[in-house]
Image (cartoon, rainbow, N blue to C red; front, side):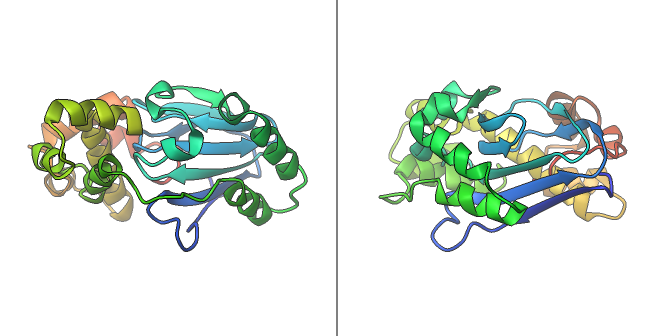
Length: 249
């Protein structure tokens, strides 16, 4: 990421950790082209003055975006499987799609957008975004807790065991997981494992890919390379030599 691009994440505050992974802001001091955003198993509500409020569904492949000088973006990233309760629509309908929040929320989205256009700072933008999301009235469902467990284990999970803990057959869990997260359990696990491998690489001064593959739960380095080709469009060495790497996940 360019030094002239500032990306910041903040914790959502007490009571939100199980539901929201983070709120984030991004500001550009120069034009940014080909900015890569990798799949992470999450759904986001995203705000920008140019495009308004949008919902970004779970992605199955890296997407690239261009930003002009002086762009300000902000968003709320939900934990995997947790967005549906707040959006009022099944995340399965949003996979690989970006839709105006107004199409999902109606008038409340328009009212929130009007407040956001009055914000003076990135911090105020984030505060207003979080205030615009209704507080959950009940704890996560058994299916959401099962997805939470997959996420906590970075996708290195025994899915049969997790389905049993949710009192579901594997077939039932496959359908419910897709409804709640936008991805089937095996697909979600692969995305989360890929995300974890990316996090390990970002922390390393010089990524050692065979070790990262083992720690992230891959059978071998070739298995990791196949997922990188699918999710990021190239081998890990090429992805991490690209200075336009995407939003930290």
